Amino acid sequence: MKRSASSTFRRAWPNVTAVILFIGFVFPVYWMFATALKPTGDIISENPVWFPTDITFEHFRTAFGADNFWTLVRNSVTVTVLAVVFSLVIGLAAAFALARMRFRGRRGFIIGFMLAQMAPWEVMVIAIYMIVRDASMLNSLVPLTLFYMVMILPFTLLTLRGFVAAVPRELEESAMVDGCTRMQAFRRVILPLLAPGLMSTSMFGFITAWNEFPMVLVLNKSPEAQTLPLWLSSFQTAFGDDWGATMAASSLFAIPILILFVFLQRRAVSGLTDGAVKG
Amino acid sequence: MTVQTERPPSGPAEVLKADGGGSGGPRKQARARAGTLAPYLLLLPAVAATVLLLGWPLLKDGLLSFQNLNMGQLIQHVTEWNGFDNYQEVLTSSDFWRVTGRSIVFTLVNAVLIMVIGTLVGLLLARLGKRMRVLLLVGLVLAWAMPVVAATTVYQWLFAERFGVVNWVLDKLGWHSMADYSWTGSQMSTFFVVTVLIVWMSIPFVAINLYAATTTIPKELYEAASLDGAGPWKSFLSVTLPYLRPFLYATTFLEIIWVFKAFVQVFTINGGGPDRLTEILPVYAYIEGVGNQHFGMGAAIAVLTILILLVLTAYYLRIVLKQEEDEL
Image 1 (cartoon, each protein chain N blue to C red):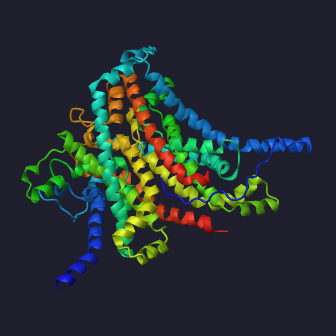
Image 2: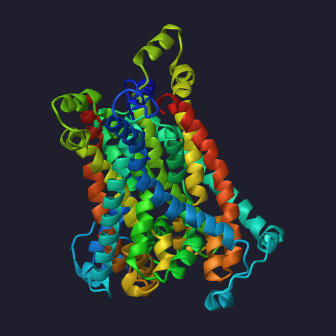
Image 3: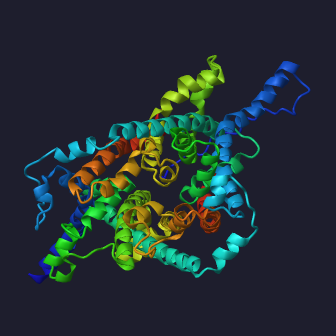
């Protein structure tokens, strides 16, 4: 009797631990959405309402109606998308060179970009503030775009190098035998095979730029020039203890990233193996 | 960062030798020269952007740290060099050393928690059946994907003084003095919240990558170990751990570096308060430099912080490069 109980325990504990861990990791995310959808009465109740029954969108309306909300959405999207696209373009060129060509200093370039990937941007804000101020570009989206581009460039470039290296060289060579120039071979053969790689790489760049906080905190003080992270961090101060609205704002900010991450992660992983196996 | 399985570039290098001239007409030579230049031209935009927008701010930080630059000088656009005064002031102030010590303890506590729990969760993932594994992976990915600033506001709400879930649970568990506890009221409780937040959001990276690494361990190694009469613990020590060691080293350093510069979490939870007691080095540099407008001082603190990070990064890159030696 005792023996079978202990063997049940031995078989059950990994599953029990897994469920407890699952709840621990998911609860904050769940609580954000649950609070955002609850009427205020259920939020400020002596006992928490664990499962919202009467769903309301009033908090989302408050968040949408906040000053400048749509301007800030536009700012965030503009800065993030441009930074990602620029870094993909110049990163891909460099990645091609590093993956496919032999030249003096190649190893040095790779190590240099590895170092750049670890750059302590959080600690450089004072110098960046001075540079941007001297250029009279405070409260502009241009410096933000450029700095975000360089922030995500090393990762983009080093990851793409892996994807380019995974495309069989023979494909490119046979295209060149068939009369393509190197550029045509790249455009017609390599680029299509790189699509999944480009997608997953841009996903990480997107997340970094979308989340960036210290730099925009220092550079763009004027309300119309801010981005969503800055807005969200001040939302609680601005709206006092309106936790419903604060959680609605957090949800709005998090949803694009959560969707991207969950969808693209699987795709990125399969893209990586596809790229290596195909051909 | 992802763990990638890159294929090293196959085949010999196709170098078009420019100096191999002699044979072939001048046209061929010109083409050969373009061939040697091509990689540099392709790298040029990336290198130029990095040097200009990363190198220049780093240099500027160094220059600013030798200047007396406060509000007055800032407005009048004057440059007053003052040699090593900023460094002397920083290095002799007890504040700086207190913040440095605090940063080190904070980083170590977080990194140890992240690595130990993350490794355990990763090993658990390897042990689970398919359905439970997918469930736990979904939870981990959600926490991983949560944007930092959104996560900090959620944690502020979870730990809120009134109507926060954490205080309610502690009260119900019989700890009644916690019913209206203000978590941001003291140094230790603020650090506690920040630590829970950082550990929560960092574990998924460690756990998922560690799990991915365990799936690459050849099964034969375990079979051989069990033939030698090794139990589960013994085979863990003699097969799993040695196999994962390089991964664990690299990840530990990565986590140390990330926690050491965890500006956003510390700053947005409580702004380095109460009474500046939870400032870690990046926050200290920001508040001294930008907040109190001692830009030169702030730059000196930033340079010292960057130097510490540079040492850590050098160690990290050495570990990574050793693993990837054949791929470079």
